[in-house]
Structure formats: C-alpha cells, structure tokens
Length: 221
Image 1 (cartoon, rainbow, N blue to C red):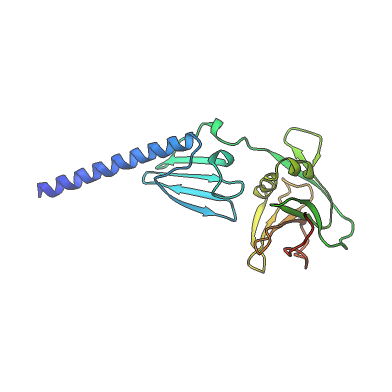
Image 2 (cartoon, rainbow, N blue to C red):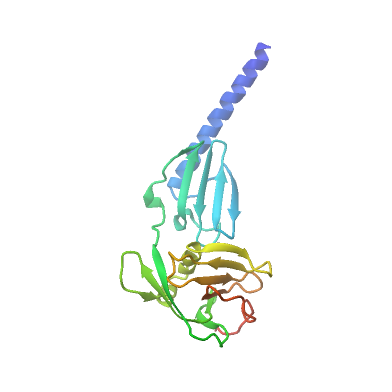
C-alpha cells in the first residue's frame, strides 16, 4: 500500500514539475518573440485568433494574416498561468496601429466593381464608393487607404480586424465583415473571397454580393 502511495506521490510531483517547467519555457519563448512549443494550438481562421493550451497555462494572439506568421507580427498577445495573467513585455508586441475610416459612398451604383489596388498577391476592389480615407488616432488629416496599401498591404488585415465578422455568405465560402459606427463614419461591408480567387471587396453597408464579386478578372499584370 505504501509503495502505491509513494508511486502516486512521485508521479504527481513529476507532473507538477514538468507542467511548471514547460510553462516557464513557453513563457520565455513568447517573451523572445517565438511561438510556444509544449502546447496544443487551435486557430480560428475567420477571426485570426490562435490559442495555445499547455499543462498549466494558456496563451493567445491575434494574427494579421495566418497562423504561420511570427509572434512579432501579431497583436493582443496574452499568457495565463492557471487563471493568473502574466504580462508579455510590450516591446515584443506589435505596436497597434489605431485608426478609423472616413468613407464617401457614390450617389449611383451602376458600374461593376472597380479595382482599387492590385499586385501579384493581393487584389482589392470597391463598389459604389468614391473614396476611402484613413484617419490615424490623434490626427486630424486624412490619407487615402490606397496610400497605405502601396506601402504595406497588411493594413487591409488591420481594417478587417477592426470590423465585425458576420459569418459566411450564402455560398458558404465568402466571409462577410461589417463596420461599426465607431470605426467608419459611413457603414461598410467587406466580402473576402475564399474560392479560386482570394480577392477583397469593400462596399457600402447595405450592398449585397454582386454578380462579378469573387470572379476571376485579368486586370493586374
């Protein structure tokens, strides 16, 4: 009987030591800008939310593009040991770019979608919009969204992360996002294609999918 109790005690001690050690290692991994190792990871592609669960800890982050990116490119990084939150030093978190949108809808919506920005990886279209401006937090002047896209296309993921996910469209492929009144002065929707094309469409909030959305177009060299 004593031998069984001793074995159980030693096993529990081993589990506690192993769980504590792996939590310490993975915390240090994240402090250094690397992803944790001793855990099970789950990724919500629609919300760009990745969670990590170890023996005695859980962590999470919000990605810009996908779960393959570096921790240094992510935001909203959290680490909990049991129920206690442990801070990740801020210098290892991406500085959050805070902004809102100022959108000018078109008076008429007669034309098909217009290529707003395109390169060999990303194509963004607008429909029934005359202008999309970015207003940085704390600044009064506006700059065209296009200006930011030409420098770094990842801003479109920042835009999407600031919007509310409304689920999949009726085709069960296209993701639908809608802005809040706090983020855009005129409500907009984003349709993010997930069929053979991965294009993005920015439209007024009351506009439904159009026939030419998420279709292949030869409009970028």
